[in-house]
Image (cartoon, rainbow, N blue to C red):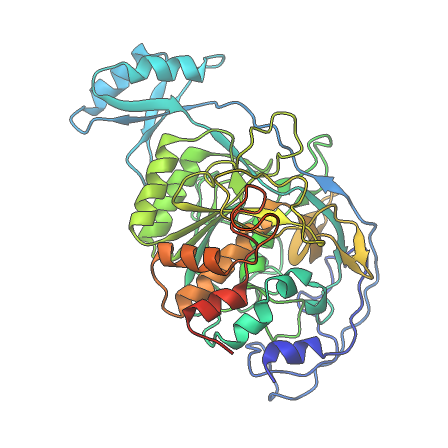
Length: 488
């Protein structure tokens, strides 16, 4: 019997519509059976694990919603001809109304700082007309694509039976055919960062169920730091001092949560290596120039898969060029389709970077298998994956959301590490990234081959064949593995 099947047979779990106090040990275990896959086990496989003390506090469910309206650009990005000297570049910037420029660290464009009240579009238009300027445009903004976050679940062992999205994409059967389970594959997570430290206090504390996950050094493009710790993103703009949810940690845990350790659930590809790049700030917003640089750095760092659970309304030249270079280098790029389908301004297609042809655009389905009402759709959509619907209870203790571990910072400053139900195309995309990593670990190296495997094995939903609500259908991890040659 496989490890995943044994996990499903472990004794009944306890679910709280709240969360544990942050003072509870990071990885408590309820009585269960150790497995050979548990890298933290101190006893032999088959030995019993002591039960932790029961939680002292149950917190009320906290409904949260993400902001959808993007703030305007505040900078201009530009590419100068290599022949221009720094002095010539500076003079062109000043003539166009800018204060100065700073070259990107990991790419060949520059950022132009503007005086207060300047119009980025006007400055970019003027600068683009200067001789020796290849292109100039406002630095487009993007956002985390979380839709909502409801109550938290305890991380008593295990929560796998509540991760209904695994059953829907037939993950456990796929893992039976995937001995590496992602080992040796590097997945770059471009997000709010990841809680991947080793200390006991935030922000260096390692996230729940990431205790033995392998990480490579990341980079914080927001604050210019060599770390990339998740500091949470504001998901309730009407309450500036409101709770902050660890968006990037949630995404990374969906991909890489450890299997067989008696804690929480499992990730899609539990043995991958994660490299975090922080491109979104505390408010959940970011700039596409940072995303472009992060893509370039991820490629240079040897990433095999890049997950982008973020999006913006307009394209960006540096972003498009970075995407094209990454695809040419053989990197699989995955992005969330966007959460604006219910908004009046929805234009009928997915957001950027998902709209670029070299990026796998992933929309969201709900518990019933329908397109989630918020999920963007259109001709650029590639596939869908479970992302949750309204986050309400749908089957016993199961909510119409995706369950994974992360943290929540309360308005009073407490940091709560727990499992949360969250919804959004942000949380459909990591499932595609995880399955892509699994296929890569089996030797499928060509991004287009992975696209074809996912497309041709997706389970059709809606009208027969491709349609603009579901793309090619809902991702089927087992079907994709059968496409590689496993037929049992």
